[in-house]
Image (cartoon, rainbow, N blue to C red; front, side):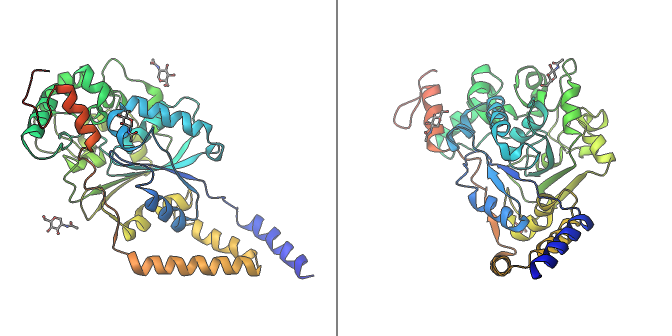
Amino acid sequence: MAFHSLHISVFVLFFVFPVSLSIPFIVLHGINDNCGGVQHITDNLASFSGSTGYCVEVGNGTGDSFLKPLGEQTRIVCDKVKQMKELSGGYNLVGLFQGNLVGRGVIEFCDGGPPVKNYISVGGPHAGIATVPTCGSGILCQIIDELLKSEIYSDYIQDHLAPSGYLKFPNDIPNYLKKCKFLPKLNNELPDQKNSTYKERFSSLQNLVLIMFQNDTVLIPKETSWFGYYPDGAFNPVIPPQQTPLYTEDWIGLKALDAAGRVKYISVAGGHLKISTDDMKKHVVPYLASQAPGKQSLEKDDHVGAHNSLNHRATLNSNRKRMDRLESEASTKVVYDGSASFMWPSSVKSFFEELIGVSDDKSLSQP
Ligand SMILES: *[C@@H]1O[C@H](CO)[C@@H](O)[C@H](O)[C@H]1NC(C)=O
Ligand SMILES: *[C@@H]1O[C@H](CO)[C@@H](O)[C@H](O)[C@H]1NC(C)=O
Ligand SMILES: *[C@@H]1O[C@H](CO)[C@@H](O)[C@H](O)[C@H]1NC(C)=O
């Protein structure tokens, strides 16, 4: 009898509250990182949202995130998401720093891939950045930094250093447009090569959440997280997103999304990628828990209430306890710190030392 009434209540609830099975999400980490490094953030997002999350890796992680050109990184992730059966009904995407360009590449370029519903960009260099990765201190690094600045748009660097795909020096725009192999295409910037498919795909997102860190010193300018950037030819002032040609001429559909009320421009306290649990819950989790933020939690509680079994209660209680604990421990604590993310790992440093024919114990010889 008890079983019978439970059965009916489940039956009724099923029709009264449309059961929206939460859709899975993927996390794409930044440069100089790997899925192990963002495990904590992936787990937290999964436990707060109740959705299943996967970190999708590119090659061997840290090294490849630096050395594989972004076009190739995008193809790798595109192949992976197509193969993941769990994502076939669509998925949400969370990008961290450089992972955002890979993610947007997947949204725009991935033919036959499953649809991305909500896209949450955490510190993404969407309009480019005007600084080279920090090799470190010392004379050798200064030499490498200078060389890189002058060679960034060479084919060799474009093919061997991922960030060269989104370095946009305002004083070298003609070279950027001609030689930079990733961002001009991603942003549909090339006057004679605009592809409306990219715009169509990007503007079909349900929500685009652009999170900028107020004290970001890695993304120069930090407003690039919102698609804001310098004008061609000068390092100031920063043009707000709505006044850039990408927006006014709507090269990728940002304006269309904005007009539909689907773009959230979020500014949070802290340095590069230093996201707090509070901000994560406020600005990221709602888009992972449901396709319509604000409604899901209600439906979900009711849905859960229908399963009146002891086991379920127990799990629920322990989940709640765990959440409470996480909440009190870590509400404003930074859950992820990406401040070192633009420093070269030693493998990358030695790669470039070899490339230009110098090392710490040798004097500079010509490349
Ligand atoms: C990762 O792959 C890159 C080449 O893409 C290589 O240079 C690097 O040594 C590899 N790192 C590890 C830890 O295997
Ligand atoms: C535009 O991009 C789509 C998707 O990658 C591709 O199938 C199509 O051939 C491209 N069109 C042009 C004109 O390059
Ligand atoms: C941001 O930078 C300002 C000025 O340097 C500083 O006063 C403030 O404490 C920083 N805030 C955070 C959250 O890092």
